[in-house]
Length: 433
Image (cartoon, rainbow, N blue to C red):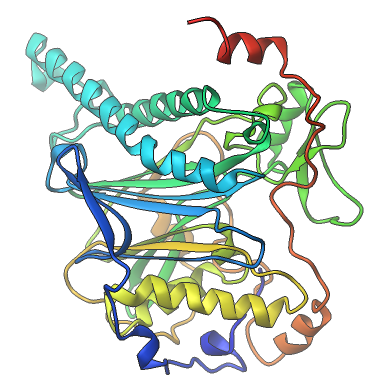
């Protein structure tokens, strides 16, 4: 949302780097990890390549969840990262449920895809097989194979969640932004309005490259699908800039995203759980990727996030530093609003620390740097640097004018509990077993 939002980030043209050392001196005090399926599963803390942190907002229980699997699919060089943002009465339960179950489903789908590819190559001459058939020349899965794995696992995850729903979780759901790194490949699966941003280097500047599209109802292709399913998309008078999905005959629930796990009250009306899948081949200039919920992106631009992470004195505290700056930005930019939950994973792509220049300005070559990014379905965001594009002396008055502005919630209004599921939903999710 607009220019820099925190005194500690970039106010009046200055970038502050001072920190309270006591606040950050214990890098690993909240580490939480366990082993599962041959992988080290991390829920909090940091490792050689990962920094994680989340902080509860002022809206109630923290509905953000995150996880990192090192040794994903049983392979040492494969890492999975996921950040999940819940909403609704049981949004925290949904996000935790997705966090704990989606990685296993994705791993299983990848294993099946690899087995099919091996059988294909056993039956055909590898020299005549095309890239889209399965593996590329580096013995890595193709984009088509990766996309198929994400689509399959996300669909299975939503159906699994549907079997667990009750009257409270019927209108609860969560977003997901996930990443897999295998060798020099990055594959990102995105569902909803959380975001993944890459930091890469262009000569002496750090450049932010947005890897995902914020999937919101006002995107034309999303609007078309929703309307074709008899859902409605419009912004309420009290929130003219926030477009939401509404039921055909009732002004609820007013969901501020067009794709999500759960939210079964809207699954007949255009809301889907189909992820967008993005691919990037890592270059030597690529530094790190930040996965974060909208609590971060609502108050900090992509470039501000990249600059904050790059300026961290130690990788292990990068995510905590980012979250703390976002919280301060919320309080400064929207003093009359409740701070949102914030969660972030900083995933570093190499062993060498980022040689940051925190005052480097956003390069206009963002689009050129994103040419390595191949993706399917919807079009990328055109601008990845700022929303309002203003950083400097003038921002104080802009922020003061927003003093009483209340940030949008993901859900506007819950449907009446007496409303029953549609016949199609009932038959799909509650058929006798």
